[in-house]
Length: 445
Image (cartoon, rainbow, N blue to C red; front, side, top):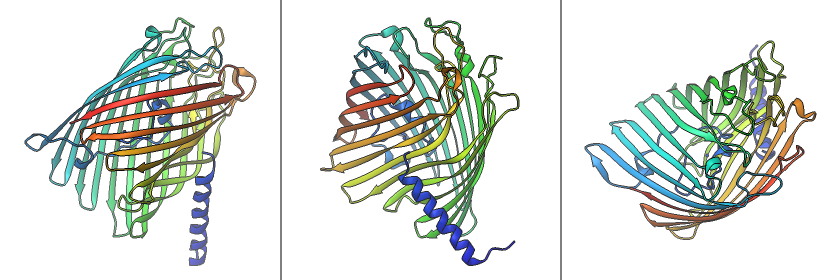
């Protein structure tokens, strides 16, 4: 049936109003003036991953081998946390040193661009070396092929990482993860563009078990996930486009025949959103709409459907003042290993939870070299199943911080800051408070 023009306009207005409501509802690639404090990378996993390749202007330095540009870097962070294990009672403080060496290789080929980035995170604690110390490695590659109307962006992100210990008797659980992606975009006309995308994520834990409960196998959390779909863009203003996204996700979780380990699911999403071009005063994308997740037959997990969204926006108020917002609402999986207590089977908190939240930051440039950053964040984790706990867990986490950034030279920067986090939970021993003081000195050549 053909809709009348008036009906189409009404649908568009309703969609705009819906997205604005998502912005005010409760609800990060590493920049030199990032508002994220050290050791917040776990929270960043909630945000949508960025697959953008850095441009030549993103990094300083002038090391060339023919057309190849080489950017070695190293940063050192010294931090003090008042609650290293994020415990409700008997919090334990410690100094933590994090050293991050790395190198970026950039190769422009006419209109095309190739980049490889390697870096390591070497974390050492003043106390609890056996439980907390770790070395992680990351290799990211990206290829951007620009054929005028046709653009292909493909790459791979690999890492050898670990999950932090939950208490003094626990240890880190190490894993390998590979995330491959490909986006193919084609401009149909001056105002229309269609993008097909594909993501494959594979995470594999090793069998190094915690002495806290050696009956729990970290490999219960192994999974493979495929995500694919299409985005349709319509540019109705010079720098603003409306988008429609359809996405399909299939996740295959390792099933060892134990309670709550059969977690395979298929999910679909139908989202409406907006995208602002990088030259606009407001930059970024916000999108949201209907999300449906169906678990495999025979699974004890409950299907879920509802509203989900993602937003990553930056608003440049003046040449000195910038606001940024990262927000989301989506279902996330619980960890089979972490959601258990000593002597109990997995599944203490159920299979998944609805996580809503975001971080709002304000940056003011006092001079070209000196900036101040204020940030506040809120996260609500609403667990959808009672599990063996006997009730639905609900967490509310609020954080606020301030930091100062000093660009000593184009290749040398210093950042000092403080972050306070308060988590309130109705589940025993899951509430905590933490004060974090940190300083980072970074070199990029």
